Image (cartoon, rainbow over all chains, first blue to last red; front, top):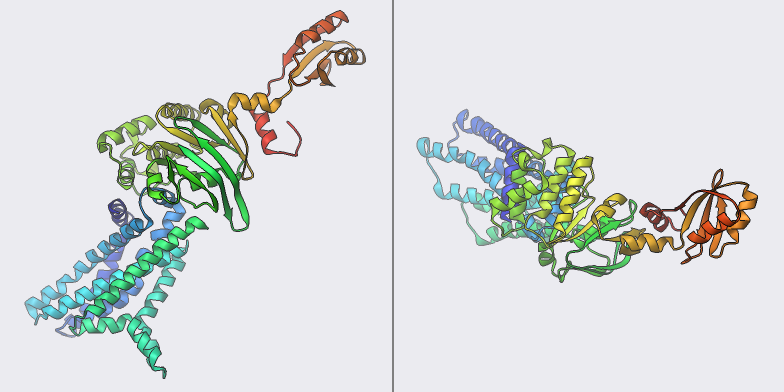
Length: 234
Length: 309
């Protein structure tokens, strides 16, 4: 797993995708920060996490779209899949490398809490809670996007599928909010990323929300390894 | 070392490999020969665990490629048809990655140095793979297969894209590897098989049509011997003379004053022909045994039903 992790991370920063991802991420965040906190004098910067979660719906699929299709195109999957490692090792190596790039981009936002410590009223517990929520959500986003990339050889289709699925998960409760059937609304709300995130946002740290994000991640990592393995049988 | 039992592989309705079985012992170099689309690469992909078999089984060093996949793959060095290279890495970075991926135990620096000098990459180690020529990319592919010193090497068309000098170098390399490794290499270049392999498995249309040493394959496949004789004179006069010789099966004129004489199986007709020609006062210009080449054997085996070559 470490070999694949290192290679993936290396490739993010030699083919430029890692830099571009971090730059676009920082640009979007800073733009909103500028508009709200600097020009509007809004003291709390917590809205930035909402924007982050929505921006990631579009950025992470783009970062992840080549992750399997490129291997197939260059036939390097033949090296990986005939090496003495399990498919799950490969999937995990790719997952942690993407996580690492995300954490680098996230570290760029640490400037906001620092500024709020200097110039405003810091809210340490809620800030930390929000950071944890965003990291957990990113794990799920990356796992889902990797899964979509394993499904298709087309990078565009993979990116669009991931964006669609992520949006669906994100807005699930809003989509079914007005339904009369109570059970559907409840299930939708249970599965929705928003519902889970709102708890963190309000400073409530519940184990079931953490388990939700981790399960989603593990489930899609497992699906990915099944899809890759299944190709051996086709 | 390698044991394949009734192996088959289907792609949807198409059967690419139809229940083949063979065994390769330690230290053998086996040439896997067949026209394009015969099932060579598919068989190799199943052996290395890249694809799963639809039926039958395969084992490497006693480990089933399906049930003990990881253990079996530990014993394999595989060069696929298209070398699996990451273009954004240098040769050194790439080989280091493969070293870690395979969890090789050999001392890293020395092992990689040895391999690079063996395949002639020493001067290219800091170059980006995407900037290498096709021949060098192929060498990186071979180097990658050698990492970790696997017992079994599976090489899918190892000399494709190399220039004639490189081809000879790589063939020598493969021959030298055979002392300590078991090698299967696929190719459709016949001279390569003759140069490198002791044993040939010919596969056609998903089935093994021959599995023998090079010499046996040539002698057995041809069966009866044919000779070319150049005899001056009237063919109406010559043919009955030749036909009367014991052991001659068929005579066919082949250009002016030239005849192809086919002997019955097992018969040696050479001295009888000399004698008959001399006794009838005919002039024998030349008399040669027709060489049955591997090309002819290959064509016959893989074209069944069509005209003999």
